[in-house]
Length: 94
Image 1 (cartoon, rainbow, N blue to C red):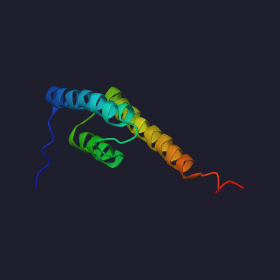
Image 2 (cartoon, rainbow, N blue to C red):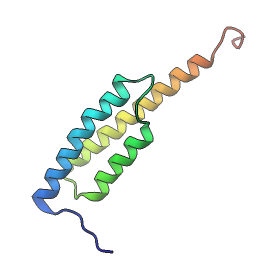
Image 3 (cartoon, one colour):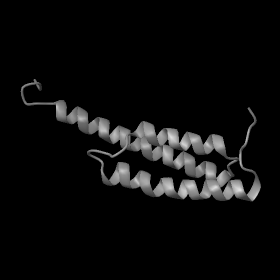
């Protein structure tokens, strides 16, 4: 099976479009719907990984991917803290 990655300007344009789309929908899915996201963080991680594997990313695009991974990490940390706090009941605190 051959590697059929898009090349040059076309590759950069496709990656830019995909990353712009992911920035918009990821924020809406995780940040705006923080209590019950439509799609889980694992889905967004896989989408970012697909973009990174399918394209020869520029430095700026790599930074965007990294920033989006950090947003997912922040969501998971906040969500985990909220879940941990909701597990604490007056009877469980001594």
